[in-house]
Length: 95
Image (cartoon, rainbow, N blue to C red; front, side):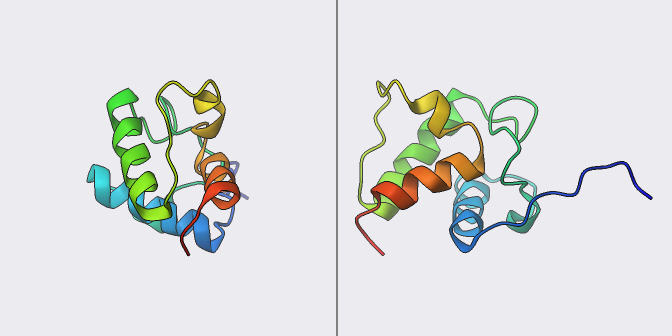
């Protein structure tokens, strides 16, 4: 029996966002392999503030709402793929 935790299963929106992350940032990981609960910063995907800015721009374009750099919730929104997907689901204006 393996002691390595199994990544959580992605929802369709999480897979869509993982694909957006991988494609917009040219990550060398398959979208389906992105653990939705792993941190986006540092340890998890290892994104930095410039990467997060790129993602915010793509999300804004694709889902029709603004992610602002001065939003005090950004740390929470970008905690993981799952928290980002929850925020997108609650705020998107396009299908």
